[in-house]
Image 1 (cartoon, helix red, strand yellow):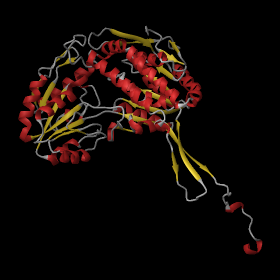
Image 2 (image 1 turned 30 degrees about the vertical axis):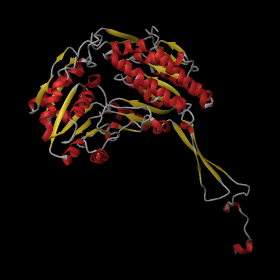
Image 3 (image 1 turned 30 degrees about the horizontal axis):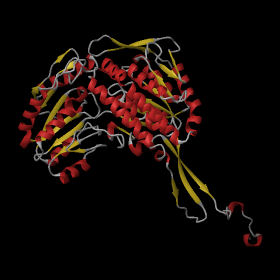
Image 4 (image 1 turned 180 degrees about the horizontal axis):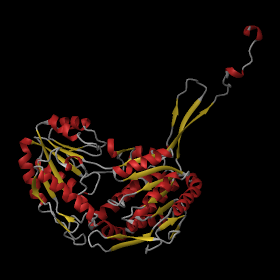
Length: 497
């Protein structure tokens, strides 16, 4: 599909912006133009939401099994377009083909899971009443029009965080593409069109970076929008939450992370090193689930760091189109500059640089810092780069304290051969997700994905994620004998005296 200037999908039709404006997304490795896309205005937003609202009644009225078939067809369409989607991810984000393939795989899994929940997601309940002749039920109904604001770092995968669940329950959707990945998101939206979805059920907006604020404001403010799902930075998440609150709209926020990985004295070091390296470096560390703090017991810290540095030096980084490359570039020069500043600050404050620390263009060498402390920016700030920061602690209690010494609370991990101890520690961590003897970077379609504190609220995935896109309605059915309503009953005048 040649997107070009016609990257808005509104009411089943690919269209340019009403203003005719376009913008360009750059390849983070070459610096060349990756995509030219339509720069939507609030007028386009109005059209997209109205198309979704128009399609809503008929889509919600379909039998759940019908919507299930549509989602399965969309999964097949994603697999058919996989080569295009993978190439677009490489061009727009710098991710090697393996990252693109993983995005496609997970999106397909999430479409399949949602399809399988076509009935379960709308299941209600019978509620006992104090009145034995009364029947009470609670039913779930689709919320209406859902806005899904999707980021660039896992552009296909994260469409799956909200769109499949919203659709299978009978909602219609407006996807706001990331400014960095308009072609990837357009290709994913095209898969729903390929699957035969009725016009207006899935709509797509692309916009220039300078227009983002106005476009998001228009999406949230529109009266027909009933839910907003946002994945992105905590800074922007706060703005969206504030705007959603102004308009009394429910919002799911999946925001930043500073995931701790605790390695206790009895841990299997080979296993812990492998998981920590993967969690720190995968997708060049550009993920909310990335392992940001490796908290290691002092008794094993030297050996752990030696092994981690040795593994790090074998990781190939650079040109994402080279089959040998594991890590591609960071998304921008600004991201590369900021990561370099974090490393420089840590080293100046006493951290030991064991590997990496330099960049060629936007390709930052996978880096290991030993001895990170609260005096360093990287101790608290999300790095969003291929940086393994090792914090050395004395014992279990200090490990838990350090793990919780942060404003974020998304993912976490604990490594120990004593699973009962690890489980106890996991329960004490202020995190929405914890993994015992596994990496922080993990996700499955059926789990309640989400965080606490500055990592957001609400859940994506699983039954909890489905419930985010429904309204719950209480219904009562009175029995044969009419209820007594004292205010309307006739009273005996003598008794009243």
